[in-house]
Length: 243
Length: 243
Image 1 (cartoon, rainbow over the protein chains, first blue to last red):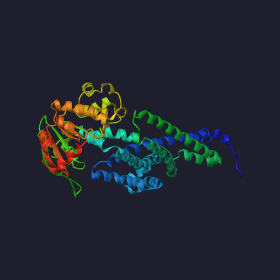
Image 2 (image 1 turned 135 degrees about the vertical axis):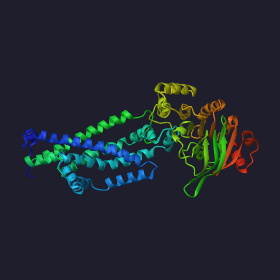
Image 3 (image 1 turned 90 degrees about the horizontal axis):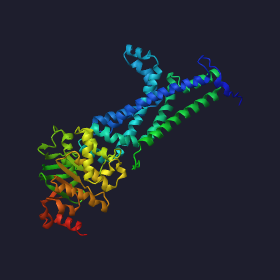
Image 4 (image 1 turned 180 degrees about the horizontal axis):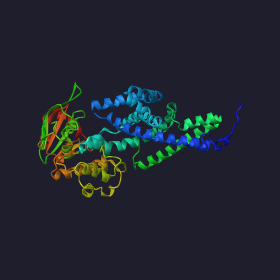
């Protein structure tokens, strides 16, 4: 292989005039963090609502939950992003479509919402599993005390269900970060995108992607560590999870 | 206090769990419900506070029809205490918070009032020192006493017990029964599903014997233990009193 390794490339100025190549990658990392966090919030909030709907006795509620989950989990993420980015504006009335296309930062918002909704289906299924894993008597006891359904979920079922699914939720958060790289296909220049532009400007493909890999690893390590702390913080004395 | 009139209940189209059950519990009366497993006794008691819906007949609780769609069920349930076989304390809440939750969220009591009430009741069941612990840190007998205290914190007009000692080790049964005997002697209206014939003998006013969804025998305690009329009840009694 005829390749000129050059690890000093990171300290050389990038052609955009925004500092060094390292700065270029770091600016991509910031975009990755922003889009992932926003997507995760969307996934967590909407996924929780849908997950709860799937456990209610109401037929309508579980039907809505079923449709949501099957819609978002049965299509490749790439196709979903294309749908939201390229197809949706064409389906809307002309003026609305135009407005959508001209939104500043459209790739960013599309990616956050698209990845968020994709992940929400997974959060929903896990929360549903968490809730149904609780003893049936918990809901009965809470109901028997006079708590309403909303109160039962808020004070009794969800605090336990979320504790139980915290480890798999950590994986989903990591998946959200990794999935955000797909947004490069709709023109979002996040970490993977900046690694590619570094490769194109400098021809140092291995250095660029090694650095991107390390940055992804570091980012995920931070998330894993934070979630470990959270798990320990909410652990219940004497209670063995998976009882 | 509790009127159960011609109650019918099916699970699915084919299986009838309750067949034309009629009985009542007067104010201050202690009624023990016994019978072999699968006889519908737990189901019957869960129908009283509408944890289980009924398909025929009516249940009237302190003048309020339970199976009326217009009935404010959470309010009605908050007036009836219920104790479950598996305690069903809320594992993520400290003992004191288990006792405070419904007082504050359902009855709207002030935090300090709820705390005072909870502390008084914990003292009564002999667990005042455990107020800051979590349920998993207590023994089964202690947890069940907390569950009784939690129900009493709502100042119930009647108490329902669904096999309160069935999940307990033999040496813990008596500490729970002691609390229930005290309660009965204070004049609490109680409906108790149990196999503890010693308890029935001690404090029950009436004993109901159920088999295959039917109330086979509904008699004063002395009559039940003296001369049960049905063969089925006689056989049941001879079996469980054998040892």
